[in-house]
Length: 225
Ligand SMILES: Nc1ncnc2c1ncn2[C@@H]1O[C@H](COP(=O)(O)OP(=O)(O)OP(=O)(O)O)[C@@H](O)[C@H]1O
Image 1: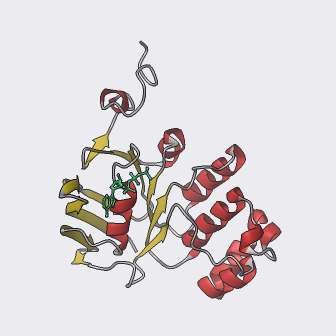
Image 2: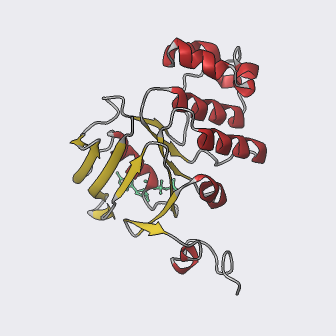
Image 3: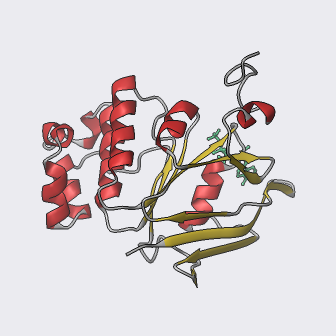
C-alpha cells in the first residue's frame, strides 16, 4: 500500500517569542527518502519531534493518507530514532529485538551479518557504529510506514556510515524516510529529495550549488570558483 505523509503550517516559538519554524511544507510517500539539512540550531530536531508528535508547536498540520493526525507516534504511524539513543542499556540485542519486532521481521533481521554478530551483546557494550546500525535497522523492520532519523551518520566511522546508507537505500519494507544530518554528502547520496531548513523554512534544493548560495556550505564546495 502506498502511504503519504504531509506536513504544513508549522509554527514553533521557543524562548522569548523567537519563532524557530515558520514555513515548513513537505510530503513524503512510501519508498521516498527525504534529506533535511540545516545549520546547528536551525530546528531540525524540533521539526522531527513535531512530526513524531512529542513536541506541540503553536500551529501544525500533519496528515497521513489524507487524515489529520495529531500524535502520529501514538498510532504507530511514525517511528523515530533521535540523536541520543533511547535503547535500554542492560538489554541484550536479541531480547530487545524480540520485544520490538514480530517473529517474521525478527528472523529476517537476524539474517543480517552485522546483527547476527552482536545478537547476544548488551546494548551498553556496543560501539557507537554498532548501536546506530542496530537502531536504524530495527526501526526499518518495525511496523511504522514512516521513519524519522535524526543524525544517523554523526560520530560514526566511515564503514558504518556506508553500511547505514545501504540500510536506507535497501529499505526492505518500503517506508517513507525523513533523514537529517550534518554529513551532507551522506544525505545527498541517499535522498531522492533534499531540503534545507533555512530561517525557519524548508527550502527545496534542486541543484547542489544552491547550498552555497544559501550559505550552508563554503563557496567552491560545488561551484568551479
Ligand atoms: N524551549 C526552548 N527554549 C529556548 N530555546 C529553545 C527551546 N527549544 C529549542 N530551542 C532552541 O531552538 C534551536 C533549535 O534546536 P534544534 O535542536 O531543533 O536544532 P537542530 O537543527 O536539530 O540543531 P543541531 O543540528 O545543533 O542538533 C536551538 O537553538 C535551541 O537552543
